[in-house]
Image 1 (cartoon, protein in one colour):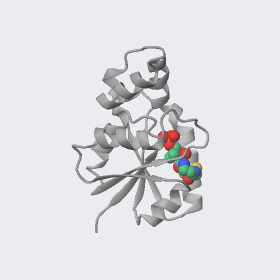
Image 2 (tube, rainbow, N blue to C red):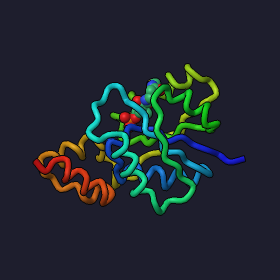
Image 3 (cartoon, rainbow, N blue to C red):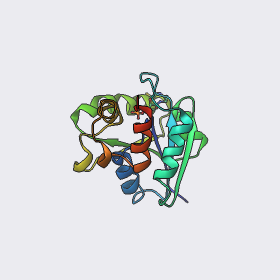
Length: 160
Ligand code: PNS
Protein backbone atom coordinates (compact mmCIF):
# COMPACT_ATOMS: atom_id res chain seq x y z
CA UNK A 1 0.00 0.00 0.00
CA UNK A 2 1.34 3.41 -0.99
CA UNK A 3 1.57 6.02 1.80
CA UNK A 4 0.18 9.22 0.28
CA UNK A 5 0.42 12.69 1.86
CA UNK A 6 -1.40 15.78 0.77
CA UNK A 7 0.79 18.89 1.01
CA UNK A 8 -1.75 21.72 0.87
CA UNK A 9 -1.10 25.43 0.66
CA UNK A 10 -1.59 28.66 -1.21
CA UNK A 11 1.82 28.39 -2.93
CA UNK A 12 1.55 32.04 -3.89
CA UNK A 13 4.33 31.53 -4.94
CA UNK A 14 6.23 28.32 -4.14
CA UNK A 15 9.46 28.99 -2.21
CA UNK A 16 12.59 26.99 -1.47
CA UNK A 17 11.12 26.43 2.00
CA UNK A 18 8.25 24.51 0.37
CA UNK A 19 10.68 22.50 -1.77
CA UNK A 20 12.65 21.59 1.36
CA UNK A 21 9.53 20.19 3.05
CA UNK A 22 8.56 18.24 -0.10
CA UNK A 23 12.05 16.79 -0.51
CA UNK A 24 12.23 15.68 3.11
CA UNK A 25 8.58 14.58 3.15
CA UNK A 26 9.37 12.12 0.37
CA UNK A 27 11.51 10.21 2.87
CA UNK A 28 8.38 9.58 4.94
CA UNK A 29 5.77 9.11 2.22
CA UNK A 30 5.74 7.17 -1.05
CA UNK A 31 3.89 9.93 -2.84
CA UNK A 32 3.12 13.59 -2.12
CA UNK A 33 0.26 15.44 -3.75
CA UNK A 34 1.01 19.17 -3.72
CA UNK A 35 -2.41 20.80 -3.74
CA UNK A 36 -3.22 24.46 -4.24
CA UNK A 37 -6.19 25.34 -2.06
CA UNK A 38 -7.99 28.56 -1.41
CA UNK A 39 -7.00 30.36 1.80
CA UNK A 40 -9.96 32.72 2.34
CA UNK A 41 -7.93 35.02 4.59
CA UNK A 42 -5.33 35.77 1.89
CA UNK A 43 -5.56 37.72 -1.33
CA UNK A 44 -3.40 36.02 -3.94
CA UNK A 45 -0.89 37.69 -6.23
CA UNK A 46 -0.71 34.88 -8.81
CA UNK A 47 -3.61 33.09 -10.51
CA UNK A 48 -4.07 29.39 -9.81
CA UNK A 49 -2.79 28.63 -13.34
CA UNK A 50 0.38 30.67 -12.73
CA UNK A 51 0.93 28.91 -9.41
CA UNK A 52 0.50 25.48 -11.01
CA UNK A 53 2.99 26.40 -13.74
CA UNK A 54 5.58 27.58 -11.21
CA UNK A 55 5.13 24.37 -9.18
CA UNK A 56 5.43 22.20 -12.29
CA UNK A 57 8.68 23.83 -13.34
CA UNK A 58 10.12 23.89 -9.81
CA UNK A 59 9.28 20.23 -9.17
CA UNK A 60 10.18 18.82 -12.59
CA UNK A 61 13.15 16.83 -11.23
CA UNK A 62 11.20 15.38 -8.29
CA UNK A 63 9.84 11.82 -8.44
CA UNK A 64 6.57 10.62 -6.86
CA UNK A 65 5.02 14.06 -6.87
CA UNK A 66 1.70 15.22 -8.25
CA UNK A 67 0.35 18.77 -8.48
CA UNK A 68 -3.36 19.41 -8.12
CA UNK A 69 -5.86 22.13 -7.26
CA UNK A 70 -9.03 21.98 -5.23
CA UNK A 71 -11.69 24.42 -4.15
CA UNK A 72 -13.35 23.33 -0.92
CA UNK A 73 -12.56 21.73 2.40
CA UNK A 74 -9.14 20.19 2.70
CA UNK A 75 -10.44 17.17 4.63
CA UNK A 76 -12.93 16.36 1.85
CA UNK A 77 -10.08 16.43 -0.63
CA UNK A 78 -7.95 14.14 1.57
CA UNK A 79 -10.80 11.60 1.70
CA UNK A 80 -11.41 11.88 -2.04
CA UNK A 81 -7.74 11.18 -2.76
CA UNK A 82 -7.67 8.30 -0.28
CA UNK A 83 -4.60 9.89 1.32
CA UNK A 84 -3.11 9.06 4.69
CA UNK A 85 -2.03 12.41 6.07
CA UNK A 86 -1.80 16.15 5.64
CA UNK A 87 1.80 17.36 5.50
CA UNK A 88 2.61 20.87 6.77
CA UNK A 89 5.86 22.70 7.39
CA UNK A 90 6.38 24.55 10.66
CA UNK A 91 8.84 27.41 10.89
CA UNK A 92 8.91 29.32 14.14
CA UNK A 93 6.69 29.51 17.21
CA UNK A 94 4.68 32.15 15.34
CA UNK A 95 3.37 29.43 13.00
CA UNK A 96 2.31 27.20 15.85
CA UNK A 97 -1.01 28.74 16.84
CA UNK A 98 -2.38 28.90 13.31
CA UNK A 99 -1.15 25.41 12.43
CA UNK A 100 -2.45 23.95 15.70
CA UNK A 101 -5.87 25.53 15.12
CA UNK A 102 -6.03 24.24 11.56
CA UNK A 103 -4.91 20.73 12.49
CA UNK A 104 -7.46 20.52 15.31
CA UNK A 105 -10.25 21.85 13.10
CA UNK A 106 -9.37 19.32 10.41
CA UNK A 107 -9.36 16.52 13.00
CA UNK A 108 -12.71 17.70 14.34
CA UNK A 109 -14.13 17.62 10.81
CA UNK A 110 -12.67 14.19 9.99
CA UNK A 111 -11.38 12.25 12.96
CA UNK A 112 -9.22 9.78 11.03
CA UNK A 113 -7.09 12.33 9.21
CA UNK A 114 -3.70 13.05 10.76
CA UNK A 115 -1.57 16.14 10.21
CA UNK A 116 2.18 15.56 10.11
CA UNK A 117 4.42 18.57 10.80
CA UNK A 118 8.00 18.88 9.65
CA UNK A 119 10.30 21.57 10.97
CA UNK A 120 11.54 23.76 8.16
CA UNK A 121 15.32 23.59 7.69
CA UNK A 122 17.11 26.42 9.50
CA UNK A 123 18.15 27.96 6.20
CA UNK A 124 14.52 28.76 5.33
CA UNK A 125 13.18 29.46 8.80
CA UNK A 126 12.58 33.18 8.11
CA UNK A 127 11.15 32.89 4.61
CA UNK A 128 7.51 32.93 3.65
CA UNK A 129 5.68 33.60 0.40
CA UNK A 130 4.24 36.79 1.93
CA UNK A 131 7.54 38.31 3.05
CA UNK A 132 9.23 37.32 -0.22
CA UNK A 133 6.45 39.05 -2.21
CA UNK A 134 6.84 42.18 -0.09
CA UNK A 135 10.61 42.30 -0.59
CA UNK A 136 10.26 41.60 -4.33
CA UNK A 137 7.64 44.33 -4.70
CA UNK A 138 10.14 46.94 -3.52
CA UNK A 139 13.01 45.57 -5.58
CA UNK A 140 14.66 43.40 -2.90
CA UNK A 141 16.92 40.56 -3.98
CA UNK A 142 15.08 37.34 -3.16
CA UNK A 143 16.77 35.18 -5.81
CA UNK A 144 18.29 32.75 -3.29
CA UNK A 145 14.96 32.03 -1.58
CA UNK A 146 12.84 30.97 -4.55
CA UNK A 147 13.16 28.69 -7.59
CA UNK A 148 14.48 30.49 -10.68
CA UNK A 149 11.08 30.56 -12.41
CA UNK A 150 9.50 32.26 -9.38
CA UNK A 151 12.19 34.93 -9.32
CA UNK A 152 11.46 35.67 -13.01
CA UNK A 153 7.68 35.74 -12.50
CA UNK A 154 7.98 38.07 -9.49
CA UNK A 155 10.18 40.43 -11.51
CA UNK A 156 7.56 40.43 -14.31
CA UNK A 157 4.71 41.07 -11.87
CA UNK A 158 6.43 43.98 -10.19
CA UNK A 159 8.25 45.51 -13.16
CA UNK A 160 6.08 48.59 -13.07
O1 PNS B 1 -0.16 28.17 2.50
P1 PNS B 1 -1.28 28.51 3.45
O2 PNS B 1 -2.01 29.76 2.98
O3 PNS B 1 -0.82 28.64 4.88
O4 PNS B 1 -2.32 27.29 3.38
C1 PNS B 1 -3.55 27.31 4.10
C2 PNS B 1 -4.54 26.28 3.52
C3 PNS B 1 -4.77 26.57 2.05
C4 PNS B 1 -3.95 24.89 3.69
C5 PNS B 1 -5.86 26.39 4.34
O5 PNS B 1 -6.37 27.69 4.24
C6 PNS B 1 -6.92 25.38 3.87
O6 PNS B 1 -6.86 24.23 4.22
N1 PNS B 1 -7.88 25.86 3.02
C7 PNS B 1 -8.93 25.02 2.48
C8 PNS B 1 -10.24 25.27 3.21
C9 PNS B 1 -10.33 24.47 4.49
O7 PNS B 1 -10.34 23.26 4.49
N2 PNS B 1 -10.36 25.19 5.62
C10 PNS B 1 -10.52 24.55 6.93
C11 PNS B 1 -9.19 24.21 7.55
S1 PNS B 1 -9.09 25.01 9.05
